[in-house]
Image 1 (cartoon, one colour):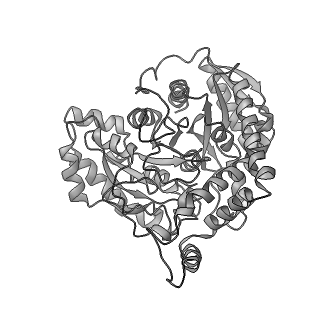
Image 2: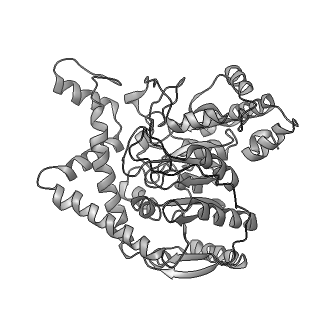
Image 3: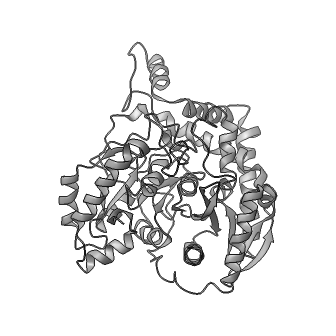
Length: 468
């Protein structure tokens, strides 16, 4: 096993006792990148290995020991382009680091490279990248999930030890499930959004994609916490999420969502029953719960997120930064620049959002969607009065084939049906590898109440240790 295949916490231990060097880790990483990247295509930009080594050696006395981390190209990182997976920003270079990046660097991480994504985070397959699709390392004919597909694929291919992604409606959890890695969507407001290019401002969150749950807890401990630069940042102190992972799970109450169970395929249902048996052996108790308004989650999510995207992406007009076409007139420049710079899916969501906010329709569509969002949130609040966490599959199926759903937006959107309810309610959630269906990774999702990441990670860790 190469050092690039080991989890970060193990590498930190080995570096601390001087059994390995950071040079050896970087050597193994770039060897894996050379072997796999031509097929997987997880990265949009990579660090120069010599420069990365010098930076890592300067950080050897810090907690993360200079270990390189991959970063989704939606997060502002100096020294790299920040394309957001869009031709509109193909040459854009940010002048500052996102708060999450500053925290990682302060802890001794280095940046390995920027990973591919669905343009501006809008997609479930990384086929909507403005540059090229990323392939799933388990089966190159299949998608890695999206929109953080590049980050998940890099970790799965061992061409990254761990990575940052972003999750708006499942964009960390779905690729984690499809690629067989761990992905955490933190509670909204737990991780600063400063320096994260906005897609849907009431939903976006930065989170880790890692080899195992302990690494996810470690990364989350570093990037979480209040940030005065982000007005949506919650007043939460720093927490070490690795503490208490190994405590017994006995007595934890786990909810099974009646409405989700009714939609599962036979194979997914059978695997879900095995998960339940495993948790019961660990001392967990199960209770059926109802989220009656979850059936409206997909249309609610796509109305709200598209409306927020319509407002956020209005800044891309060809004037201040990014792609520019024509100087005939301002309106012509706007139209031609956006037409050339944005991809099909981004245009679709901008138009949907603009329509939903337009005069005469805002009350009928956008405000009604906000009302349903409140009802979905209330469903979860009631559920968490009787359970500690909620268990679901991360997705209805394993990874689908490249091109299978790209021309059917509704089918693509329904891939996120188990993911968007927690996003709308601004809860924390995690996807962990939990078996296979048709020889492809299949993910188990756990959902926790707001700011209950400690409970969530504890349950995920216990299951991971027993299942493996």
